[in-house]
Every structure is written in structure tokens, then in C-alpha cells.
Length: 138
Length: 422
Ligand code: SF4
Picture 1 (cartoon, rainbow over the protein chains, first blue to last red):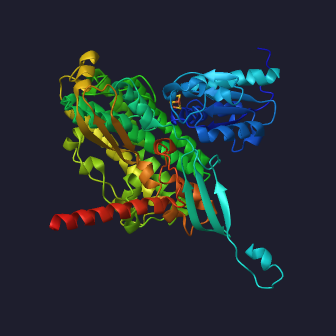
Picture 2 (cartoon, rainbow over the protein chains, first blue to last red):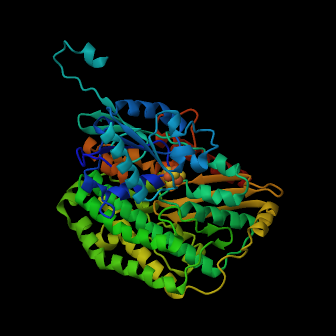
């Protein structure tokens, strides 16, 4: 893939825009020993300002819209956004709700979509690796 | 203002500051806002603001094509309680429509619900360890949790959204050949139970950070109508599985667990909440084991043909309630069905966190700022469950909101009693 492999450790910020938690716990599962993506230096950080990747879940509840934009702006370039879960990609089961303004790509540019409700930790891992490739090329 | 005015005075003037935490904050797993008024390090007041992730669940559920589709929506009220909500919903609809459930299905429901409790309590234990900065325990517990995830995947075909429920039964059988795999998981948890107990109950760090932190007294728990492990840790022995004894729980002889079982006293702090949840993992193992031993044979669903089931649901008229003891506490669903109407005429959910959030101001007052993450996490809050209602005019304090309502309700009781006496 032409990676200058592992040149940088990817730091990830997790953003919940109104998800059901299903995807969020799978993201955590991907980080913990069974799947252990931390062994590649992929780490969850507490501030968007430290992050390279924004892992966003949820169908964007109305109150979260402005916050999502703010958090996206706080992530330094180059950055990649991954929409985890069907509801992040197109609203999922909540598609017709009055209190949603999403999906995510209406507010911030999404680079990688992970379908599934919730996707398995393997799928999330693959998405992060794709993000990596993208950042390496940037 | 006051401190500026007094600047040239030599007298020291104390002012309090407000620290907003959230809606997005590393110490919170989900969007919620806590406004803390602090005096130095001490918290003097707390305001809880919810509603950031409101998705309009009940409205959606009443606008689906039919109630069966609402089951899958109920599953996604919360990804962690993806059994509890459908469980309560199907019980409510079954009551409203008068649908029978075969005994074998009741046992399967209980098995899968108890597996969810194990996974949810372990998940919580990990998050709690993370909140006090004990990440090695967080990783250990989440590693251990994968075993039950595997077992659930083996039985239901999915790790999280299990889609087991249907009105009048379950959609998937648990057969004799599958028992050994489930037993293997149970044995695994029994074998490491003492180790987990040692870590959480004897470790010095955990003791220091959780003993006498976030205390909720029994009176307060009763006054604020707290539910689930949070209430039990304060010495309130209530458990829907014991009090209502629905489904196969009626055969299980369940006793609500309070922390004095092993510590000899009830403090009502974070430590006690750990004790209760740990013991409940063991209780769940016993329940599943008993279910496997005593599972009756027979059908798993009373009406396997979906078209016929839909016809029954369309004709149904009436109200029903479903109560299930979710890992976080009592989960309550109310439905009303009208004949000739395809979707549910009314659906109301009360998730356990909604009740438990009311404990936050009481628990946090007088604590240090550093204790906020662990004290807040100790009720195992679930925002996706809670944010189904929007208060149009936000009252300032969460507690007042409930207390006002509670006062109103008491008033009504008194009024009705007075009328009745006359
Ligand atoms: S995609 Fe599904 S599991 Fe993930 S947050 Fe949305 S509803 Fe929940």
C-alpha cells in the first residue's frame, strides 16, 4: 500500500451525536485486549485538539449539530472523519425522527463509512486502518 | 460583581464558580451537561441538563407501520440494554392484546436477559475503573467481558442488537446442543469471580477512591424513587424480578441484593454499588444455570406466522404495561392499542437512568470536583435511554422537577382520598 508503515501513531477522538451506545461500546471493544488496536498506537484521546481521526457515531440530534461542527474545527489538519454505524451514515432506524438533523455528512465531510448496526469491532478496525492509509498519503 | 466591589476591601470574599461539564467531555461517555457550582474544590450545587441526544423514540415507535417494527426500534433505545427494552415492550403489548407466551420462550427470554446483565455490569465495572484512572483493570474487565459477548453471539447471531424478541415468544430457540457452550461461559465466570472480587473489593486504590464517595442515604433513595443497583446499594431492597416476578423469574426465587450481604453494613457509596453489581453477576450466573436445567420443552412462539400475528395486533384494543429489571434498574413500558389501528396508539418508556439521575445532585454535593466522574458513573447513567422527553421550559434543578411532580402526585392522592371519604 506504499505505507511508510507506522510513521505516526493515530490518535482518535470519539464523538457521540445521539447514538444508541451500541456503536460506542463496539468502539471501546475494538480498543480493549481482544481486538487491541492500541498495539498499533491507535489510542483514544480526551480532546479533539490532540486527535487525527474523528470517530463519529449517531444520527445527529438537533442540539448536537453545532457542537459537531465545533469539534470538527478543533481537530488539527490533516484529519479524517469516520462515520461509525448505519445511523451515522444515513439515520438508520431513526431516519424519520423530528428531532434529528443529520446524517453526519450534512455537517462535516465524512471520509469513511462503516455500515452495520452496530458494526463489529473488526469493521471499525478496518475503517481506522483505511483512515491511516488516507493520512499517510496526505 | 461582588468580588469586584470588594476588591479594595481587605476582607476576603468567597465567591463560587460555575463549572460546566459537558455535553461533550472526556469524563462523560455520553452527552449530558452538569453545571457544578464550586467553592474551591468543594461542590455546593449541581444542575443536570439533559436532552442533548433526544431522538424522539416514542414518536417514532408510534409512527412505524406496525408494532413488530417497533420492537427493533425499542432495541435501539439503548445499545447496552438491547434486551431490556424489547423485553418490557413485548410484555406490555402481550398484556394489551392478550397474547399468551409459551413457557419455553419465557425461559429463553430470561437467559438472554441475564446474559445481558452480566455483560452490562462488566462493562460498567471497566468504565468505573477507567474513571478513577485504573486503566489496567478497565482492560482486564473488558477482556473478560468478551466471553459473554461470544456466548451471546453464539445464541443470537449478533453481539449487540440481538433481535430475540417477538410478541408471543422469541424468534430463536436455545437448543440442547447449545447448552454446553453457554455452560462453558458460566464456568469461566465462576472461575474468575474471586479474582474480580479481589481486585474490586480489596484493592487499595479502588477502596480509597470509592469508599465514602457519592453517598446516597436510604431515605434519599426512597424519597427520590431511585431504582436498580443504585437503590439496592443504598439499602433499599427492591428488584422488579422479585417484586413483580414476571416471565420465568417467578420460578427463580430471586432476592434483591444489598451490600450488607458481604460487608455487613450499608453505606450507600460508590463502593457499595460495586459490591451490588459484582454480586449480581454471580446471581445472573445462577439464574442462567437454573434456566438451563429446568427449561421446559415445547413451542417458542405462540403464533409463528407473522401475518396472523399482525392481524391479532390490529384487532387488539386496550392498555398494557411491561416492567423489566434492566441492568440499571426498573425499565417500564406503557402501551395503548386501538382496534383497527396498525401502529401503537401510545407508547411511553421510562428508563432507569431517568429516575437515577435525580440522585446526582444529592450524591455530588459536598464532594470534591475530582470525584465527579466516578460518582456520576456509579449510577451507570445511560443517556440514550433517558433522552426521550424534552422539557420545553427547562426547570433549573433536576431534583425540583421530580419533586414538584411528586408533590403534585401526592396532592392528588390526598384529594382523591378526601373525595372518597366523603
Ligand atoms: S448504528 Fe445502530 S447500533 Fe450504532 S448507534 Fe446507530 S442505532 Fe445504535
